[in-house]
Amino acid sequence: MPLEDRLAVKEVCTDMDAFYINVALEVFPKAKIVLDHYHVIAWGLHQMNAFKQILECVSGKKFRVRELLMKSIHELSGEDIKKLEPCFRAFPDLKRAWKIIHEVRKIYWQKDWRRAYSQLRKAVWLCEQSEITEMKDLGKTLKKRKMEILNYYISGTSNAKTEALHGRFETMKRLHCGIRNVERFAKRLMFCLLPFPILTQLFTQSV
Image (cartoon, helix red, strand yellow):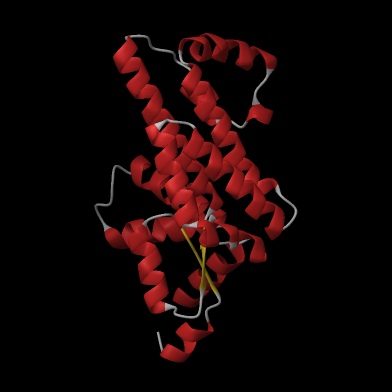
């Protein structure tokens, strides 16, 4: 890509991998880096689940509530809360970590950059005060990447469409037992993913 085109790129939305962030900064020097909000939340959930696994390993107690812990508080029913209560009674610090993740989610529920910044600071402070190693590590990441996180409020940029497309790609790959013939697989992708008018035009031109 010519330098002129690269300089024209204003935003790059990526996950939290430092490699991709550094590549984006190198290739698009004038672009603002936006961390995809899904990956920010996902990293917090990963840290919380890692903490849960340690607690279960040490105590010998196991609770099948991973899917419930992954949900936002607003998505949980009264019955879901009841299922979580035994786990939280056994592991009070896990409940604390779960509440911190909710505060991280709230960063993206604010009306503007200023309020989001305030909420981010609150989430970092809660991580630092938690005395939970995994939450402290999360706090360090949030603090280090605060500008990239808050850049979401510039235009609401997200990787949602790209992630959805990638998910469909992986599903097709799995259904077809991998990629044995690249050309045939590419045609399948085109048939399943491209809009019908474009497919019609392509096949018409090829005839």
